[in-house]
Image (cartoon, rainbow, N blue to C red):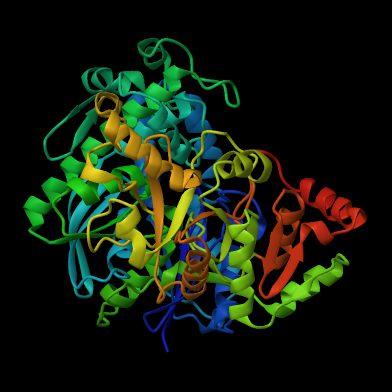
Length: 618
């Protein structure tokens, strides 16, 4: 047996992954266990949980792989500061206070935290090499083009290459400070959202605006080529030498200072979001076409934080040159831990790879499990009245009926998801047909901005009847946006309101289609969908079948089981506390059911106050 531990840490979204004889045994983000969102600390808890999945201790490990090369990263920081000196001295001093204590001592930290009795070989990979490995090795393809795009690794901000059998090779790269990911993050920051966590909010805001600033962005901020490479005018940005993403020149260009977080969102911010999303879509298409022309591959795999931009991914699916695309569900830095471990197994140890026709990600259900014993103990601890439904078929029947009557259900069972999306194991589910559900979930359950859309979970075999997704393009990990299916398949998904305005009949048909599942239809008649098949996700698939039998609708709202500012719930205790702090109607914890209407006021007050004391709004 060969056991390989992969680690990502010390930037954001620290994680650990365990690969045993090529099998992905576990992969867990540290935030899920510490309850600190985007926790960057060394993932000691995630490591412990990964090892527990195989009843192992650190002595049983054969290799430990780290997702980047700290010394090369440090070299980039030093060279950047020297290039901008004397500006950026404060940023330089802050780095000097952090790096010598942690990031330059990663080998000794790993050995100290693992407490291993022997010297386990440590392997350090390039950041984008880890991303590339996480994208290709679990993919369903024997060979594929590889594309990784993020803010920055050591020097690379984007790479492309080829994966064949059990090897990857990266041939081209874009280098810091020129970065599509950092450009998008600059607008995230300027619009008042937090960098490295608020980019998806900007993406959700974009359909409310018009891309009126696109020309300004392309003329003033960047130069780009047909191959997708870009050059940023650093006179508008501050991330190389300062503590902010943008500077006064940027602010003057767009008519004023950055939006203050939590302040009113103006039409200007919506238009900025639409503009940078439009630029990102076009750049991604250009890069993909270049990669296709140079590699001649039919399939593409993707990773890196920008690969989580499901709007751009949807454009690639519909308009790009590739026959199929597979995107790593944990495309950000957390997934680098998995890529590092798989790289050691396949490429360094030269073990063969046999692709799974679906993929080898196991539905991304790679985290800790909730057992019936844990669920029962949690509910008994709080003296909560519950019902145990031992038969899964009966439980799913009742859940389908509750959902059909517009009850909101918090569902926590089995192994937790790896990556940012809830896929049915730590999910809040609701009726997509309800016109009230979107606002109810945002304001009374998630406690978040009212403009934020929700994702539909749809039976894979019914997807083509509801969404305009290319044939043979599943979206099991909620990483593609697709237009709602309407007659004529006219292009309406990208804010082309003039088409609707000029065609009353089409507008009427769109409104009818939209009204059928309004809770998951965004303002531009699109949705970030999850296609649910029986192999990857048997319980959610059966639930959707039962819901369809009652309602003739194979679509449910699926959103993450958490509130704003918290990570996805992990344990039964996490799920119960989140349930008590929200207006979720029913909690299904393993095979145990708690109905809000049956709770005593004393139990509700006690559990709610304990939970609310533990989280703060992001």
